[in-house]
Image 1 (cartoon, rainbow, N blue to C red):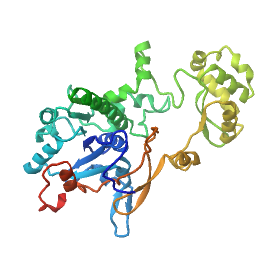
Image 2: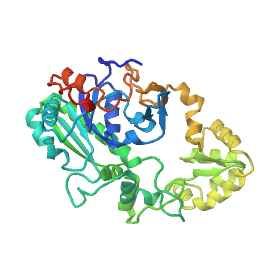
Image 3: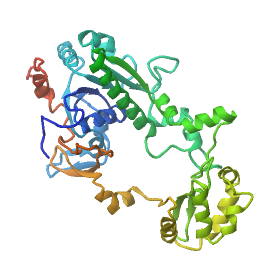
Length: 402
């Protein structure tokens, strides 16, 4: 893997400064980097992005370690280190911001403004600037200055209330949905704003709240509430408006089927040897099946217990009924079909070790995703970047920022 300076891709030539830490901001930045934009992390010389300290670590023979978690969100980027206590360094950073096309940040509201790095200040230097702030609750309102992490947004948004078993307590989704959903909304909004800025010469400010982002992907739940004035409830793996559409258990382990229409429902009935169920008055339509899904699940589960999950999966695959094993990440990451898809990539780390990472999942004709930069050491590109972007380089008397 080469440390390329000239990069191809649909976003090549776009300059992005990422004031990002942990997940949402760095994920949004990586989406741009993966498509060829020049993405530069701005970090403090002491602690940097806090995810640098998250295990697991890959260590070389000299004992130098590098975070696997950090690597997963920071490939294809460069890093500069800036001491925000130094007026001279902040002034140079302002000059750098004036040469950027995009700024992405996920600090609390007002933090960057204290250093003269607000959108209002920087837009006077660069009217085409697209500036995106990712926060828990947005820039205004009663909760604007309230701290937020993924789990607190999952809780307050209602997401946890529909996750878990019906009779159990609400549970957090195992994937940080709030962080990554906000990162996706941010990247999509920035891409749209960059197009508009090219057309009009006018940049924009994007206020991207995690809470709003999670509510945005909860369209089925919010529309259900507005439709019947009743809050959606936890259903385990079941679906509120479809059945059989959930997890069941074979004689050895669980699996999932999703018979999402009447034709697939009849295939399920034939597969389990109960063709008369298809015309049972309780199950004749999708709406009826959802209404009586507990009874239906009990009937089906008795049959599913007689054969292994693999046997049922083969049966349903042959009938065209969507189905799947309930994998662990070890299972799916070692699935030959995933390897053959080209989704997994070798990722070299700055300390000479290497790991595997999941690449950009969408395929664009005419562009092949690749890893052209290792995840950076903190401040690795400081002087190189300032010189390349045409800003006076930092004095080299401070080793911590070289």
